[in-house]
Length: 346
Ligand code: NCD
Ligand code: ZN
Image 1 (cartoon, rainbow, N blue to C red):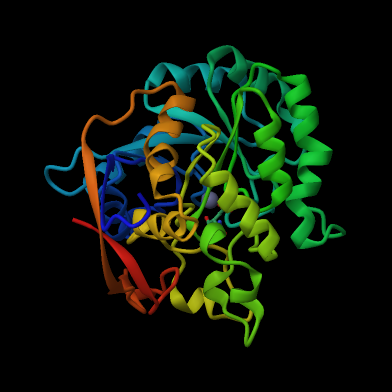
Image 2 (image 1 turned 120 degrees about the vertical axis):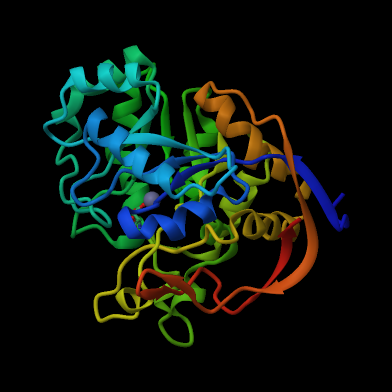
C-alpha cells in the first residue's frame, strides 16, 4: 500500500481553519475550497463572531469568494465569551449553519482577548450546548505566564479538561490542534465524546525545525511545536485508525512581515497544500492506508454528519512548495516554504 504512487480517497474536510475576513477571503477561500468538501471556520476575527447574526453575515462574505461551481461549504462556529448567553446557543442551533462553539482562554492566542476568563463563567452555556448537541471546540492551553509555554497544553488537561468532562459528561468536545503526547494519550483513553484535530505542522515538524540553527518564525504557531517525542506520539495517533483523531489544518494566515518580526504572530499557513502535507506525513509513517479515515471519515462521523460521497486522487509527483504566496498587498510565507513536497492532487 505504501509504495503506491496514486491514492484515491473520499473527499476530505478540514475541521479547523482560519479564513480571516474581507480582502483576505479572496486568497483563503479558494485555497480552502480546492478539494475540501467542508471547512470548520474559526471565529477569531476582530471583533469575534459571537452570535448567529454575525456568523451568518460572515458566512455570506465567505461565500462571495467561493470559486464558481465549487460545492465547498463553510461551517460556522461561535466564539464564546464571558457574556455568551444560553439563548445564543439555541439560536445558533436553529440556524442550521452553526456547527460548534469555540473556547479560547482569554489571551491564549491570536485574537483571543475577548475569550473566556474562567470556564465556570460559561457553565450555563455549556449545559445548553450539551442539550442541543453542539460540540465544544477547545484551544486547550492555559494562559498562565507562570506555566512554561511547552507545558501549557498538558497543564490544561490536568487543570481544566478533566473537570470539564466530569461536569458535562454528554458534551461533545474537540481538543483542537493537539501538540503533545499527553493530549494524544488522554484522547485515546476516553471511550466517546472527546476527539482531537491534528495539524500538518505538528505531524511534519518539531521544535528543532523552529529553533535549531537559527530561529525560524514561520514554524511558530500555538500550541507551539514541541520535542520530537511529542511529534512521534501525534504521528502514531493520526495514523492509528482511531476515529477520535481527524484532520484540522489550523491554517492561519499572517503576512510574512508580521511573522518576521520582533514580536512575530503565531500561525502557519498550509491550506494551499493541506492534503499534500498530510499525505507526506502518512507516507513517512508507512500508513498511507490510514489517510482516508483521518482526512475524510472520522470528522463527519464525530460531528454526526454524512461523509462526502465523491473522491479525490493524489499522485506522487514531487513539486516545489512556493517561498511566498500573494496576500492582499503583502505576502504569506507558507508552511514548509521552498521545500520539496511529494504529493499533488490531480
Ligand atoms: C491561530 C490564528 O492565527 O488565528 N494561530 C495559531 O498559531 N494557531 C489561532 C489559533 O488557532 O490558536
Ligand atoms: Zn486555530
